[in-house]
Length: 393
Image (spheres, rainbow, N blue to C red):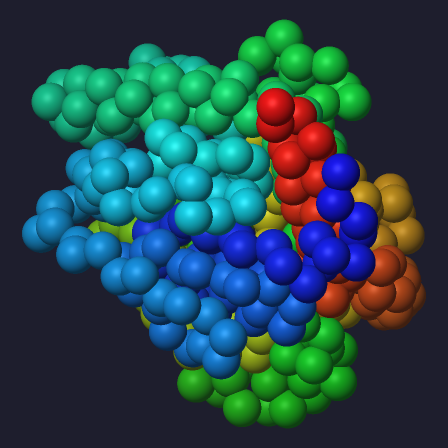
């Protein structure tokens, strides 16, 4: 078996992901991980696109992206990456879930079976989307779930989950032992997301957004609005005792949700910002983050909000389980308007408690960093490579 020192010096690692960038999600995780691994290893990146990161020491293998929507594009990538990558050239091929067929290890960010069930419930209860769209989404989700299952079973004992929520899901869905799954939580950039942004962000952004300095403002950050609970959040405004403003930052069907807000009589209290270059400023200008997604694998926006000192209203899933101490750093909420409204009222009614929460949640966020994340991933990859070589005849 190779020694740890030799493994550290000689690992050739293929990282497989559609896109790499600093926006969020899996793209952000690999944008932070790849340059750190490249300090000690030979890193090859198989992707459609990469931007915003230092590429020194990284060999980029760009695959040609097809002119397709996101779902078919991801399926095409899984096939194309499998043909492009030669596993024998690498000590490890690290996929992001099931996005290739030739992985030796998988970093799992999603819970496709759970998402599939959630979308099915959404379609039944809210009639979300046309029949054709729902049929396509069901077919797409079934393919993603099959790829995920294949990766989980192919890489058992070499699975890295981004949170205990994802680890429990993998164990439950694929009959894996807890020791076959390694938990490595994502990180956060504390130089970008920090509490001292609050005063400047409030002075600059609130007037631009039509928000008064004294108003209580909740921010909802990210996409996939139906899944993450934006309808319930807007409904919560209508039944809350406090006059709360909501800023929605991310891409989605704005017109549809404006109509919902108008129907509920809260149109003047809901604002939308489609795209921002500095999400930290929109977090810093707010009074709390509301994130009622009950099947959140991790929730980078939740951690980034905490690093900005923003009290949290979030479901019991992902990183919220690590960050929220009831009444100290925020509150757990259910995926229901009444629960969200009660949480908003609780925070809006006690400015002194809110101030204490800001300090406490920021302190709690200090246990997370991208350096810690990369160091733990590196340790596991070395272990995987050692075991793989030791198993060879």
